[in-house]
Amino acid sequence: MTDQSLIVELLELQAHVQGEEAARYHFEDVGGVQGARTVQVEAVQPLLLENLALRGCCEEAWVLSGKQQVAKENQQVAKDVTLHQALLRLPQYQTDLLLTFNQPPPDSRSSLGPENLSLPPWSLGDFEQLVTSLTLHNPNIFGPQ
Image (cartoon, rainbow, N blue to C red; front, top):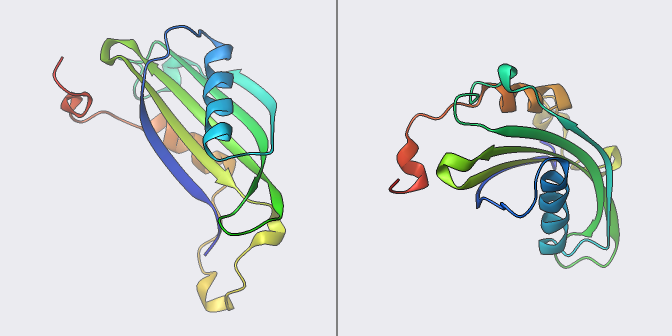
């Protein structure tokens, strides 16, 4: 068991920001919601649409890596957490699809016995594979069009 998490959000399309700035906007927004003490973008790169299973409805896609200093609930000490975010922009559905992969520092592993560590933690490669293979089975998830 790890403290990793994967969050998938369907957000209103933020049409006032474009390109790399859209990825930065969502990263900073997540930091604000989580009460991050510091937010630092380390890299922003475009995803090639032809590599995406969602290429038919995705107009642009970005991957961002960065760090946020956050304290867990009921804790005073803030820790640096590495976040990887993928932003898939779906304007035909007025939606920004945001996937956030949270990679806590190695020392924050749960102090559970070895029997609970049978599954290795996810890697950035696992996250990228998820992002590129994501498919849309039912567009009604976005509401009436």
